[in-house]
Length: 159
Image (tube, rainbow, N blue to C red):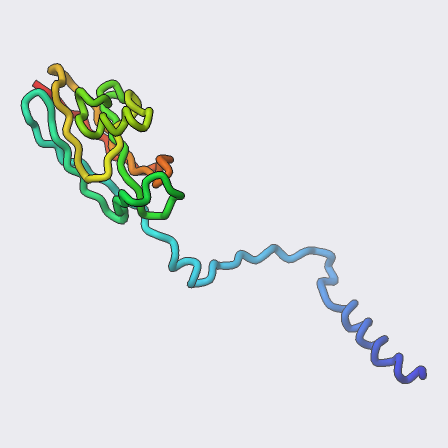
């Protein structure tokens, strides 16, 4: 019987002997994410504005990179790289139907008039503006209207 216990005793001594004799702990290793996880990281979207003058207002065309406007997903859960646009002229002061047309009407319907004008097309037109200097911000928005953190800003002068 004592011979059968000997292998277990040797195994216990061998396991106890593993490790550092100095008492120091080795630093934790940093693991790299698997290639499959790294492949799913999307590049950060970008947005650029091109302004066209039109008398007492202006029209803006938007160039998007790595972001797709998805009208059918508005109001649903966020999907990386998809959503819609929020335009804000002078902090929302001109984001009403009178100034931002159909976008302002949609803002009124959604209860955000005076905050921003939503858009499911890469453009917006503002009209009936008094002469002056304006700041337009175009924000990329998730489907649920939360900001993505990506925006473009443009100063516009209406004469």
